[in-house]
Image 1 (cartoon, rainbow, N blue to C red):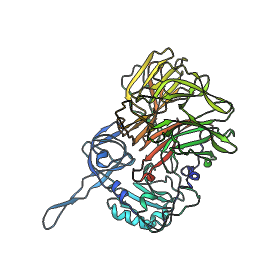
Image 2 (cartoon, one colour):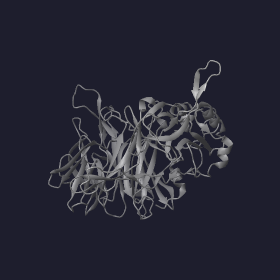
Image 3 (tube, rainbow, N blue to C red):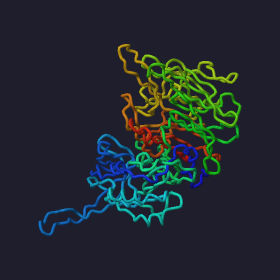
Image 4 (tube, helix red, strand yellow):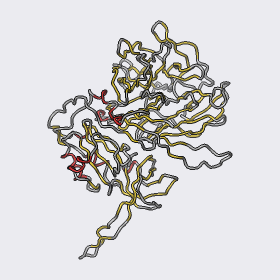
Length: 584
C-alpha cells in the first residue's frame, strides 16, 4: 500500500465545515480526568497471548485504556507513628485493554514489560509516562490543567515535549506511555504503539467559552499511521489436528483517518466519476462525503445532502455496466404526523462533475451482492410487517431509462436470505454456497438446492441501523425498532468477511456497540474456517468495503467505525473514523 505518512490527514478536506480552533477558551478537562482516573484491580489469569483483568465497564474501563501492572516495593513507614503510609511501588508492565466483558476484560501487554502472574496488582493510568504534543501553540494552559488533575501520570515537561515532538504527529522511536495530541479538532490520546485511546473534540473541552470558536482554514492535519499488527492470521490446521495453536500476529498496516463529527453508517468504494480511479463514499445518517486517494493523499470530490431522509446503508454497484459505479442508499423517511418511518431508498450518481440524487422513494431495502461468474449486482427486499425487519423474496434491480426498477426474483436457496447479511462463494468446490446471517445473527451456509450445510453457534454481525414501525399489536403504542443485518461480503479469492460488534445488548431498542473487529472466513467444503481477523477497535464497526481504495493495484479493506456516539443532551460530540487495513 503506497500511502504516505500523511495518512492521518487523508480526510481533512471534508472537515472544513466542522473544524474549530481551540484557542481563547477556559478548557474543561473534567471528562478527560474522569476517563483517566486510576482504577485498581488484579490480573485474573494469563490466557494465551492475552491477560484477563478484573476491571470492566462498570468500573469505567474501556477498550484502549492503559493499565499498569504494579510491582510492590519497600513500605513507607511514618517515623513517629510507625504507621505504614505507603509503598514505593514500580510499574513492571503496561497492559492495553482490547475487549471489555461483564466482570472482566481482556488485555495485551505492551512491549518492554516483565513477566506477569495471576494476582498481580494493577492500576490504570498510574506511573505511565505522559507526553503532550501541542500543534496549536496555545495549549500550555491545557497541559497545566491535565498535569494537575492527573498526578499519577509521569509528565514530561511541556517545553521539552514541544522541542522533541515530530513536525506532524505520528509514531516515533522510543515513544513511551501515553501521548496527548492537541490540534485544531481537539485532544487525542494514543499509546506507545500509536494506537488510539480516545479523542475529545473541542465541544467537550471548551467549557465556559470566552470567545466564539472560529473556523479554521484547511491545513495539513496530523498523520496517524502505525505499522503495528492490524491483521491477526489464523494458522492452517495440521491434518486431523484437535487443537489449533495460538495465532500468529502479522505486520500488516493499519491507517486511521481523522476523527470526523457525526455517526458514520457505512462506506463504499467505486469508480463513480468514470475516471478509472477508485473513490471512497462515506455515509453518515444525513449526508455522503465523496473523495479520492491520489499519491497517498485524500482529495475531497463531492458532498451529498440527503435532506429529510435518514440513511441506513450504502452500497456501490455499476448496475448499467457503463463503467461508472452508482450509489444505492437504503433510507428511512418519517411518516407524516408520526414518529414511525417508511423505507424510502435513494439512488445517486456522479453527474456534471457532482454527486447527485437521481431517484428517491424506492420502497425496498437495498444491498449489493457479488455473484461468482457474473459480478456485482443489486438486490432489494421489501421491509417487513408485523415486527419483522425484512419481508418476502429478494429481487434483482435493473436500470432502465435512467431509473432503477425491480426486476426478476433472485433465486436465493432459503427464505432466510435478506438484502444484507448475505454472500455467495464457490472457492472450495467450484459449486456456489450461500453464506447468510439468520434472524438470530448466526452464520449459516446453504447449498444451491436449499440444503443447510453448516451453522455456527456464535452470534456475530450486529448493526446500529434501524427503522421504526408500528407494532403488530394495535394496543401497543410503542414503536418497534427494526434493526438491519450486518453486511456480509465475499471476495473473488473465496474469503467471506463478517463484522462482529459487541458491548451492547441486542434485545432492547437502543444499540451502542463499544468494541468490534472484522473476520475473514474460508469455506473448506465442510465449515467456515477463520483465515484472519482485524485487531479489535474500541468502537462500533458500521460498514466495510473491499477495494483498491488507494489505487496502488492492491485491494484493501476500508471500514467505518463510530468511536463516540455522543449523548442525548450533546449529540454534537459524536465522532467517527475511517480505518483502512492492508491485507496479508
